[in-house]
Length: 447
Image (cartoon, rainbow, N blue to C red; front, side, top):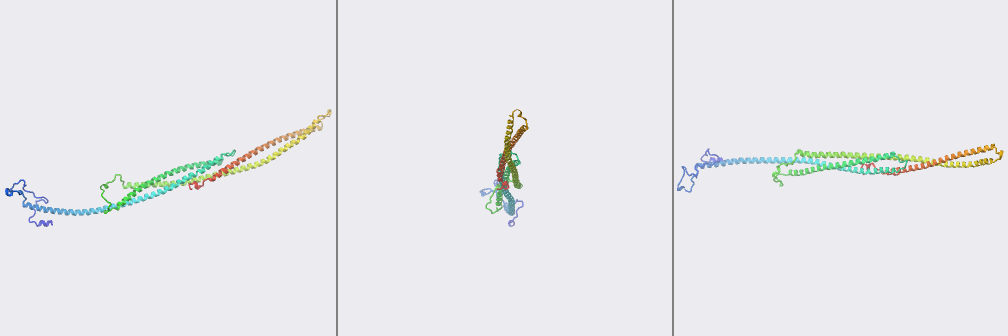
């Protein structure tokens, strides 16, 4: 249309006039001089300087050309604007789709790590609960050792009431001391293991809390990114945030973000494995300590049984010898009586012989003869005196033997009483008390 308008004009536009410039005036109004200057009253009130006709055409041509140029520039600008709008629209759509895709990939990554954290938290929780159960077993096992220790100490104290000569350091006492020492060592081991379990439980809970905080942060970030992923151009919740495109100084990189979660998972897994190993160790400790205690208990019981058998045998033999001694005392008492009777029986013949000798000593003069009768009476007295002396010596020996038998009887009766007391202590006091000894199930920490 612009070219058609130009062709309808009568005169072509001069080539020397610029496209968008107006023709200059040849004369200024202020000067009011020149060849075409009019003056006088006829020109009063009118311009003194006017454009020429050529200038008027030039001005029209300039306006036409300027309009053409402006339309052409506008068309180009409009075309470029349309292309730019379409290009920016496509770029915005691609960028938004790519951003949405990246946010979706980020959601998948967060969901993956969140699931790993949740799994590790659940495993840590289960492991901590199992370790707590093992700790309770340790505490029950420690409480269960109080009964064997009190039994062992009570047995030792009861055996201190044995009487001489049974107050000896026999193998029963040695086994009891071993049992008491074993129980003390087991109690120390259980206390140290309980402390180790408490420390491990605390570490498990710390790692669990760290993973839970990381999981919570990822859940919050996941919800935020999930909300962002659902935003679109027609969303009513979107608005301008001019300063939101700046990076935060404390923002992490994908590498540090991944490494942070990986480190948390590695530490949690390490503590979980350490907790599992500690549980296995606690199982071994409880099993071994329970078996050791029961084996030592059996050893002490066997020692008690053996000692009681020895005491029973010794008491039986002492009773046997006591019975023999009592019978011998009876026989010896009868023998003493017989000896006394024999001595008494010898006194009458001695009196007769001595009286005869005494009477014969009064024979007169030559009648006082050392005849056979005199010699026989003298020998009779001597024989009787010797017999009495022998009988009296034998009586003394018999009485001494009787006294020795009485002493032996008293010693045997006392020793039998001592053995009976030792048997009562070992069998009635100690062994009956040991029936309260806990079972292996209780010593292993089970109810």
